[in-house]
Length: 444
Image (tube, rainbow, N blue to C red; front, side, top):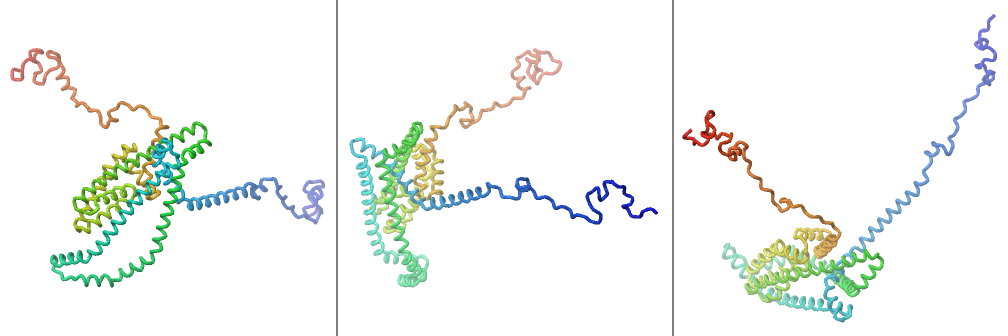
């Protein structure tokens, strides 16, 4: 009888038998687990953090911290940097006078102190004189205010048919809510104003101190700066320093000329109107409007308007109109011409530099923008290579004149000699050559 199970049909020694495969009948081993990847293999490298990543993260955090600290430190000392910049240009402005005095045998420190002392004495005397004039005029305005108010009320009543009274107007003003709130706010803001005044005085003393050191120790400062540079760089630094002094001096000279022109113009107006202290007011307008940027014009014109109002209110209006008109004349005509001649700067560049300086540093930027840009332009002109310009009419601002185009047929008729093959318009097609051409229209 043939065996029925499948194992009986498998021959001994067959590779599929359990004996051949190493397995015993009735037993089955579980499948082996996959081997773990070697630590140095590709899968091991992907599962671990790269060695350079922690160092890169620490370096990035350190750079961010250094940037934050540098930004904080810069914002803390930006006021000092601006003061140093003002002091540097102030030292450049007095450099010609100090060099002239030291060249005649005076010690440089003594010469610098003498120049600054003269400037301070002149400024203090001018401010004291103007303060006395302003105090006298304010007292006079306060004393004359009731009479001026009565005349104004009478004119309004007679012109518009109203019935106003000075006593009622004074009572309504004194008991008004806005006046009481203004007095309270002014009382609370006295401390802030005092703090600002003291801060301004400290800043002015800081600028003067650094300017004195820059001017008195200018040769030593230049020597120290050049000692760390190669000879070629030393020549460039000294050239830049000389250019800066020249341009700053030219800027001060142009401002002085504009102050003189402004003072003379306002003196003529104030003297014609009969305003008191016209010479002092003219000097005030000239200096303040030129050497205090941005608000100097309005500050300079406020005092003459106030004093003219004490004489006649209509005179104050005339002074205001004159100040506005003269300011436009100075901004668009006088200042560009003088700046172009003294600082050697194009009027458009000068105007744009003032706007850019005001946007960057405010009033300080407006004051030093023109000499700074003029210095930079003069210094770069040494290193910018220039080429000869082509002789082209378009360079001169005009184009070539084009000759009027003549039709070819008309050109042949005009230029062809008599007796040649070209027929004139009035000749008939069968007529002879020379005879037909010599005959006029009527003869043909």
